[in-house]
Length: 314
Length: 314
Image (cartoon, rainbow over all chains, first blue to last red; front, top):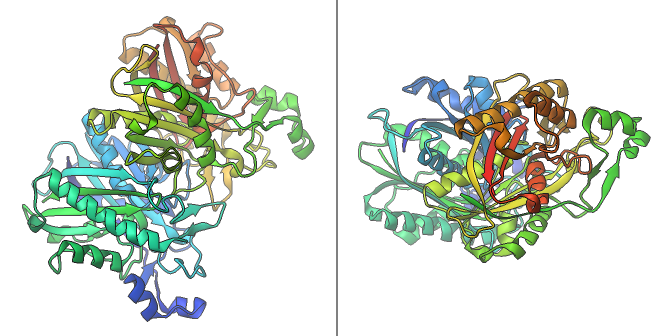
C-alpha cells in the first residue's frame, strides 16, 4: 500500500509554558526539563475535532494525483471527539462530498493513527477499498484541565491526514512496507494510567511514571519487531518518528537503541502532545526531506494501553 | 468467517413510559404509537460502557469452544464511551487477560456493530487475526436528557458480543456470507440529524423526520443489495434483524418489502433504542431459534449517516 499525499493542520494559537507558571506555579524550566515542551497548540473557539480534520485534509487535496471523490474509505482516529455520532470521518465525507465511501472513526488512544492504517490494510486486502483517507485529530484542550498539574500542561491540539492507495499511483508515493499494532490493556496500569472519561473527570494522567516505563519499552519493542520481521537493520533506517508525548521517553529510546543524532524526528517542543495526531503531523511536516529509497519508521504508544509501528520506504 | 458464540447484557432496571408522563407529559400511548417502545433498559449507578461490555462477554465465554485467550483481535463499538482512551475493547482485554490481542474501539453511530465485523473481515483477510471478539455497547442514559421531549424517552442501555473465527470451529457456528457498510454523511441531514457531542448538548435528535426517511430507505437498500450480491431472494430469508430504533421504520420496511409476518425480529418494546448494540442483542437473544441452513440478515442505519448489512447462514 502507498501514501499518495500527507498534510496537517495546527491551530494558530500557541500557549507558552509561562501561562502555567501564572496559573499553577509550573516554571518553563520545570516543564521543559520533564517533557521537552515549550509551547502547545490550542484550538480556537469554534474549532473542534471535526473542523480541524477538514482543515488537515485541505492541503493534501491540492497535491493529490486523483480527485478526492475517488476515495472509497475514510477512517478517522481520535480520543477527543467533538461528536461520537457525526464523527470526524463523517465530517470529512460530508464536507468534501465523497459519495458512499465507507466511514468510521476509531480510538485506541495515542496509537490510533497506526490502528487506522492497519484497518485500511484490511480493506485493501478484501478489495473493498482501493483508495483511502486516514485522518487523525485531537482536541485535547476540550477535555483537559489547565489546573491539573500532573498533565494539564502537556496537551496540544492538531490534525494530520494521509491519502492511501492499494496500488502505486505516482513516483512520489511513499510505500508502506509493514504496519502492526498491539493491544496491551493487560499490562501495568493499562486502563488507568491515562484516561479520558467525558463524564468523569475528562483527560487525566494519574500514573505518568508507569506510562513512561511502558511507552519506552513498547515503542522500542515495536521498532525492534518491525525491523526483525522485515530483515532490516536499524542502520538502514533514515528517520524514526515516535509518538510525541515526552522528549525524555524519546531520548531514552534513542539512547537504548544507540541511535545516531538527527534520526529521531521531534516536533513536540512547539506543539505539545497532540495525541494520535502527533506522528502523522510530524511525518507530514517533514514530507520534503525524505529522499528516494529512504526508510522511515513511525512507532507509537497509547493509553489503554496499546502500541504500534509502521515501516515506510520513499 | 464464522460466529462461534453470541451473548448480551441488559441492565436489570427498566424505565416505563409512565416516567416520561410524569416528567414531561408524554403519555404511554403517544410514546408507543410513535416509537414502539413501552420501556427502556437503564444502566445502574456504577455501570458504564466498559462494565457492560465485560458483562456481555461473560455468558459467551461459557459456550465458547476455545479458551478466550486465543482471541487475537478485539473490536469494540460504541458512540457512548465511558473512556475514549481505556476503551471498551481495552476493558475487555484487561478483564479477561487476553494477551497482546489487537484492541480498538470504533464508532459509526448505530451502524458500528456491522462496521466492527467488517473490520474483523479485513484482519482475517490479512491473516493478522484468526479469532476475534466484537463487542457493541451503548450507555445512552449517560448522555441523553430525560426532559428532551424529542428523543430523551427513546434510548436504552445494553451490550452484545460475538466471537468470530476465520475458519469453522464447530457445527453450531453461524457463517457470515457477506458483510458491508456504507458512509452517508453527504446525504440529507447527515451530520446534524442525530448527534452526541459530549461537551455540547450530549445526545440529541433534532431532525427525527429526516432520520425516519433515510433509515427506511437505506436499511431497505442494504437488504436489497446484499440479496442481489449473493443471488438470494427475500423469500429464502428466515429472519431480518433491523436496527431497533423505531417500530414504525421497521413496519415501513416490512410493508415495502412485502415481508411475511414474523420474519422481522424486534425487541425494542422492552429495551428502547440501544444504539449499535441493538441488533447484536436481538441476534443473540434469538440464537436458539435459528435452524440449520436458515438465512438471517442484519440491517442497520446510523447517525452521521451510515448504513450496513450482514448476511448469515446457520
